[in-house]
Length: 347
Ligand code: SF4
Ligand code: SF4
Image 1 (spheres, rainbow, N blue to C red):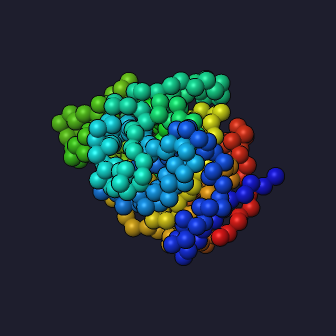
Image 2 (image 1 turned 180 degrees about the vertical axis):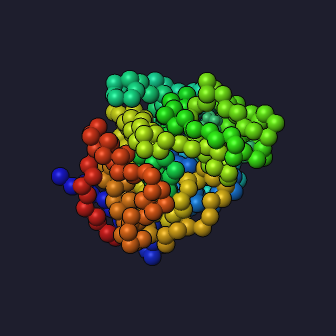
Image 3 (image 1 turned 60 degrees about the vertical axis):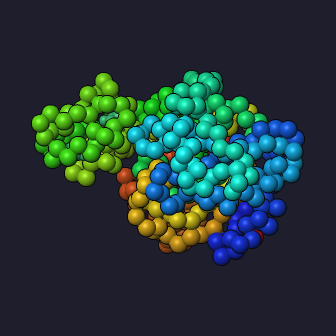
């Protein structure tokens, strides 16, 4: 059976509020419940994140039903401006996410230092249990607002990525990344030191002008492959990305297990890299629209297909040729999170 995916073309974005009336968000909201609006506030300097003006109508609707919405995201493992709750909240405020603009408070999901989580038993292939950020786990329902764009491990990032990687605690994020241990070619190193600053695990140090990696400390986050411009780090992508994608799906499974959930994907400002980067170039596809669905797999599938349709070929393969972006969708369907079959209801 096909799942329904609601679609608002970008040309009609001024009717966003009206469109929301018919997409069925109210089904996951009950009186006096705490509703998590999971979003990515954008790394400092990033321009692609979902804007606060899209949050306000949702918070208003939820409050009208007598429930209590709050905006949330978990801390990062890389050394940026969202690695602890204090700085994360400051970035959210700087990007306009506050009570005045959004109509609900910001609560960083996994506490001051990213270790406030709850173990959810899932008994799956990669994980028996997953460590989910507290404020997400203890919410009564979750509305995932996801900015659709490319991602260096999953090919594209949509709801599944937002739920899985985005709601894991620091320990959870490390566990998901763990298959990505890079191969190092120290002879290419210029000694610039950039990767040392980005490595969240202290696994890299310079010895003279040559980089040295301590494999026992490396958590496989892949940050060094992105921060080094000289090709020193290489990842065995075929093996690594499939495994990480499946792990992310298992985390998404743990987040959504037994919880009322709904998703809204924003297909605009579509860049090659995700909103964890301050600046990563101009959008590569025109702004397309917004999609909403209660089925997370159908929602991400519809988004990926729509981008490819507008681009004219497989956009995700073009930006990351070594990644099979279907893996996350296939595995999510296999776990029963939803179906890849959908029908579009256009506004
Ligand atoms: S060495 Fe690279 S992959 Fe390993 S923890 Fe450091 S940045 Fe991450
Ligand atoms: S970023 Fe690359 S070139 Fe610079 S120190 Fe690290 S490995 Fe060497």
